[in-house]
Image 1 (cartoon, rainbow, N blue to C red):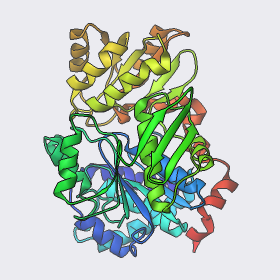
Image 2: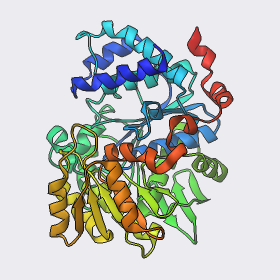
Image 3: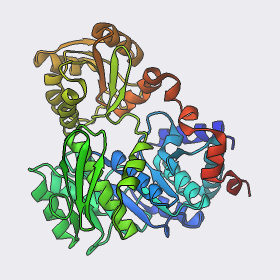
Length: 446
């Protein structure tokens, strides 16, 4: 397949929907020769912050000298965004070659068919293995125990903040959901790194960890982060104290940083140094995760697709924008807690333009607008994300700000518009000679 055909194949698999279970993925991995299973890895699970933790952990391992793959989901700019090697997005040639191999292996799957997420996960794992990755950091998609990523044998598992989300699939309380996410590791597992949890969730997460007799490093015990003056902060792990300068205004961003430092140190078996952390952070691009795009007006992009994520975003907005209250462009998926998201965002926005993302799972905008109006927010329904963004920009004016939130699918619709030429994978991937060096394209032409 050429890159365009590979993209079409992946996209068309969406028609098959979501099907839990590991049987198909395990069979596919056997047919492909078990790519990534024996590569040292970190499995990142949790409800919020997974993508940031994944990219930061991978960046620190790269800065320490390891060729490191990072697998994230969902994407904002395109399928290839989900797989990076040493911070470089998977090139079209590599994507096509890996997809061709995965498609050829599909007949080895008992049902003879795979889901979209299984396909893109297999493509990434195949590409990482063929490129000679020394380490991989893998973000789980949904849950953990039955997620398609749960075919690696990760010696380190990083658990980010756990909250209520996908309750119809994972359970209706934090302890049950945490247990599903911890299912990527066996009972008695000792390589756990637990990030900051909400006070009400912490006892439930501890109960889930104890029930499976797991142990490791906990934020607030073995790991800690303290903000200093300006951009300075100090991260403490069992390997010692590390002072770094990083432009991370939100407390939850600093907590994610500390979790990523802990996960990387557990892989390396030593402490990171300041240069490794700061160089790693400098090279990270994290589309749609508290992303500020400067202009007139400023546009802030954040997925914030559940109440906990929306609360974290609401806490960060004043730190980013000061006294400016943004005009929001909001769209959500039908399976989300719309009322909880609106409760969090309403106090920090001036008005809203509510729309429907292009995803088939998107909810109609009218109910969201009614929820906002009930909370005193001027909310207008606008047909189509692009028109909603245009209206919000006009309302905000050159000196104002626009906040796009509620769904990563909405961000996927609007990020290329907001970011212009930088919102394309071609621009994000860097010069072709750099791609060839990082991904070793010749390995895929054998």
